Structure formats: C-alpha cells, structure tokens
Image (cartoon, rainbow over the protein chains, first blue to last red):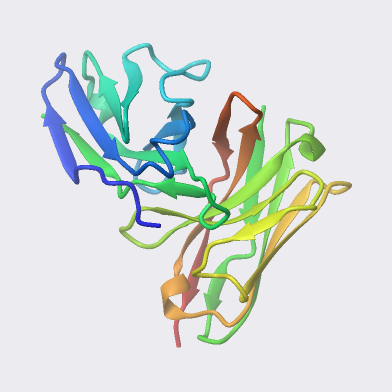
Length: 112
Length: 121
C-alpha cells in the first residue's frame, strides 16, 4: 500500500486561502469517509485538525475545513496566519489489516 | 486532559532489541484501541501497529511484522512495543496514539510526544 500523495509544499500570504490535496485509492480515501488531517510543528507531535473528512475537533479554528471527492481529499485553510506555517499530513483508514492506516507524505506550508 | 507519554527509546546496535512503553491518562483506557506510528528523520508518518481495547486484535505493518510485538495492560494503563532484530531503517521517532472509532466515525485523535529510537553501530 503506497502512501497517500500530497504536494511537497504550498505557500500563501497572510489572509489568503490555500488548499492541500491528498490523493489515494478506492481502498482508502475512496472507500471510507475516515480521512483525517494533522498539523505538525518541527520536533512536535501531530495534532488532529480534521476528522471524518470535514469535522473539526473542539478547539480547532473554523479557518480549517476539509472535503473529499472520489479518491481525493482536500484541506483548505482560509485567512492564513503566520502560526499556520507547519507540516500537514492527511491520513485514511484502509480496507486492509496491513496497513490499517495510511498517511500522506506531508506538505510543508509556508506563510510568506 | 487526554495524555499519552512514550518512553524507552534510545541508541541500539543493529540486531538489538528495545521495549517502548506508552503510559496514558485522562480517559478510560480500556475503551480505546491504540496505534504506534513512527517518523523517520525528515520523513513522513508511517503506521506500524494496532492493538484493540481488549488486546484480542493486533495488526502490524509488513515492515515490522515478525520483529515487533504490541501488547497492553489495561490495569496499568500501559501499552508496550517490543522491538527485536532492529535495523538501521527502524531509526525514527515512535509515537503512540489513541484511536477513536465506531461505525460512523474513526480517527487517530491524540498522540504522545514521541520517543526517539536510533539504530546504529
């Protein structure tokens, strides 16, 4: 099972919106609505930002939103802020027992 | 507050063994499954193992199957990852993470801070 495919980097200016794509297969993203997005700062643990494609955990800013179409999921961050500069990973439950979860390779977001 | 804390990482020679532990607090441990996820230096996240709430079901990534063993002690709020026959490509930060799943919702929602494992001679 290959990792989900994400762009290596994206960038945007403060106040702008950006979208990060995450492409999988019919065995993962295409088969389940169990897609999550994580934010990770250097040297820190991942933090859940979106679960079940488009739901935000308590405490996560409404500037973060998620969607899915077919085998591709997307994370959109609106009103970019300097603190959003981090690595973002998508993840999906998989229709197999190995792996059970698959992750994207990560996208580095730079706020210009 | 949900908390997970890993321990047991360190430097080990190729072919050696390490036992990682994950201590949890802030939730009813016996109600949740747990996963181990690792991150090699400068790389992305890789799922490596899962254990159900009752220990009845365990899964492993092909990359660690036959070398790693996951276990848990619900009485002590502990999860362990026994790692044998370690190789250089096992070098990574290892995270334990809670899984919150039911028939309509599923995610890995809380992560520990990670413990670093370095396999080198």
